Image 1: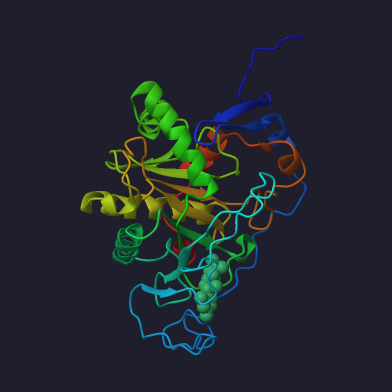
Image 2: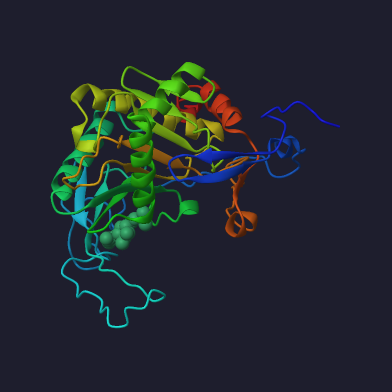
Length: 350
Ligand code: H2U
């Protein structure tokens, strides 16, 4: 029997115009009765200071370097960098299309957000978060002069492979455009050439009109669960004015970013009353002399949790072999996040 299509009931696919691929949405499965674990995870308490933690002020790192007694942000060269400068270029002797190599030069930095290990961006003050934003802009400015791509990213929580609870992020800069950036550059450019408009600005404008996936907004920013989200509570932060790179953000954009980031991160923590794990990062125009009008700076948050502090979404099986898939729709996820309080759950308990 033919039914009328309802996006919150019927399986369908959604297109991601930034990647040019599809996500399978199966909302009927989200209605399955859940008999699994629902209790919150036991929160691990992290000491504010631990001399044996190599990210703490005054601690010794394994290579013998002693950290300064820093009081704000602290940036250092990664002691175990994935990318190096001045490395020999791979031989192209074979010239075989099935065995291709390409040079990879770069630099890896670690940035501590705060001297205290028991804080996260959600719990830091507005002034402290603003200091992180200013340092991100400084790093983009400085490294952007030397490298094609500067990837600022934060892994939070052991479940995302974060090696240390101390609040920190990483910055990997490379001589080449990484895969995600290369595809995005191509898709944004195609849209720009076709419509003579910026895809992400068009997208933000339409989301603001629809108001079904918007979690938070202010004068300068919008936070949405993207229409094509793959992770259950994936979000995107987009500035509302055309902005190419992180260091182009004005004072007002930075202040409003503090507010919207804090709103999002507090909601994330409140969702399962846990310090919410995620991988996040910033994408902006490549650092080259080309016309990058098709680019718009944005942040991506990919959190793995699905149903509770301990039940995560795995990208396995069908996702690895066929197609990325989700149950809960982007609209349902957005509504849940939007409805959550903007006061951190830990304040309520105290
Ligand atoms: P993650 O927690 O996101 O894995 O980042 C921690 C990074 O910090 C990691 O890349 C570096 C690791 O190499 N690190 C140092 O450079 N020196 C240390 O003493 C500890 C960790």
